[in-house]
Length: 113
Length: 113
Image 1 (cartoon, one colour):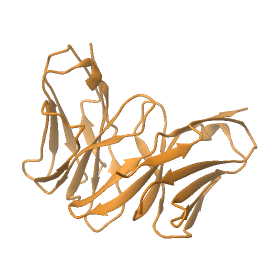
Image 2 (cartoon, chains in turn orange, red):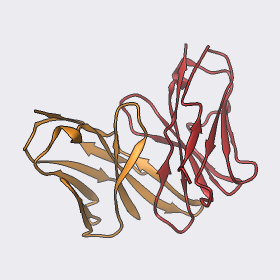
Image 3 (cartoon, helix red, strand yellow):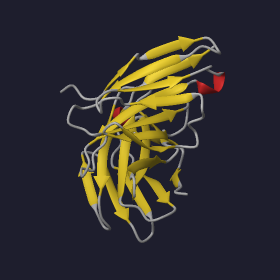
Image 4 (cartoon, chains in turn red, orange):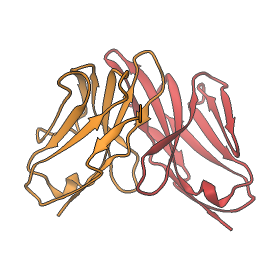
């Protein structure tokens, strides 16, 4: 059974600081996703990482993928309050019947002024 | 196209009642997924359709739950004899076979009292 673990689960940081969220998964996968969720809202797609060594950046967020280590990271640079949200990683594995996402527990990020 | 639509946004029901939710996917997407998200957790896969065929059901989907996608377009998720443990956000997502993007709807928040 595919398991996805994130750490930390809770992160409180000051504006202007850098930090990294880690996502480990238990078996080989085909794609890795990062989503953002604001309270009471749905999931907003941030990044899709398709291959080993993939790196994507958008604003203050950068995601990377190491398929050999089964590890993805989401790095936050010079955090601002607007980044406060819950961040999920999810792994997509192709099955004979199709594909579906398995999510981590999420990292609740609070950026304090 | 306005994305994935879910109706209703919120539903409060008494324990033991039946409820039905609707999801309208992006029109050209042939794959449709239902997920359940409880407070503080990541979304958990419930079931998946390709066109009108239900190809996979999670063990989480007890016999009180049934999902349909009769014409390969919109889908319904029915919960019979609701229990307090059914209280959650029910998320629908759609995708196109061969593509790696998933689009999530805003969700239906169910509260069983």
